[in-house]
Length: 496
Image (cartoon, rainbow, N blue to C red; front, side):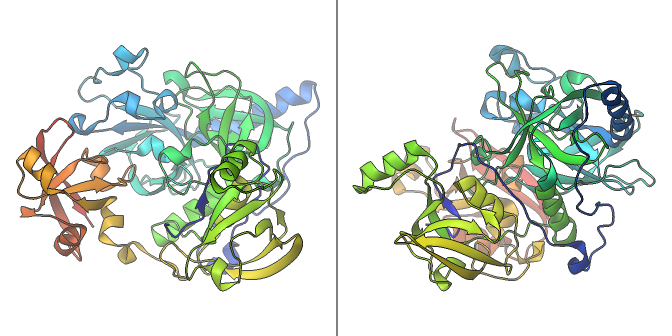
């Protein structure tokens, strides 16, 4: 079992909460974030609504940008392989036959949105907006264009951070998304369907929504979306969801639709979680995520409980909480005495009604953070202090220099069987596994189950071979691989 907060991913409706470390304790200047404060009260139905919308629009539109994703045509996946194509805003899309046509040369492979969050050019967007790009162009609302640097990404939350070299830019403040309320007026601002600087209005329809979409690009996703009925369409992805003050309460990320276009429901990553992610990326170069270290079952999901009962011949009842199926050795949970059969009901002051609640409450913390975990054992409540750890069991912050080779290139590898080598006529090779969305291997066109034959001209037959070649290496990396059609390709990336 991987060292993670894993188990059955819940698709149920939940009510989430978040927590982040204060900037005063970080030692880093994040002054472009507003301090947590309650958002504006409900807006009455009258002329004030229009006035507030106008003010919020004037604040927001200049800070929302278009992001153009340029990819090497030979490395692009077919559009129907990308779960976000319907939302990412492929301007050459349409029906499936048309989607499979390659965009004209020198045209972007996809269009999305982003939000300027500091006057010196930091921009937040979605991971899927920037995934696979070898060039990212940012176009401001005034049509000025810049080539952006990708600072970092987090597939677990679908958040990315970019940087352009400019000063004095308009930007949005982060509001406290914990304080938003269902029924509150909001605006969605982005660039849908190629229409720049589009503003739509609606209300917050729900909080803490899990739609089980990020599990397709991450093994440990965090989903607790803000749901809105403000019209969101392809191209809005990465844009702003703001309150009537023009403060950022979410990053628009997904829509629930049978057609791929607006049908009434859109979903945004809450600003508190998005803020924590970009703080980590800016300070450390990668996201610092704490894990409890348990296998889990969502007791709020009747189908999952029924399947578990049938498989294990047990008699668990549907209800609130997360049932512990196992604990990871040497994890924070095991160290604190939590064991299989316990039911987690609270993290600090946050009630845990579902897996989504738990993953959000824990996944928004850093390794080394201490949390108070309340759980039921034989019907009796217990509360213990748990020190969260990272996936490798550490409690300290990590930087890019601390990453393993497989983490840096975004892929793991398995040895090939002799039969596969014989069938393909190969003398060497490893099978790519768990290729990370937007990672270096993904960018050059390698996906799961492709065969990597050589790296920098040297044959590889195990993950240790890959690590030996690339451990401590910086510079251009050439990868020779075989795709699913048996074609041999050599492509490269730069390892920093």
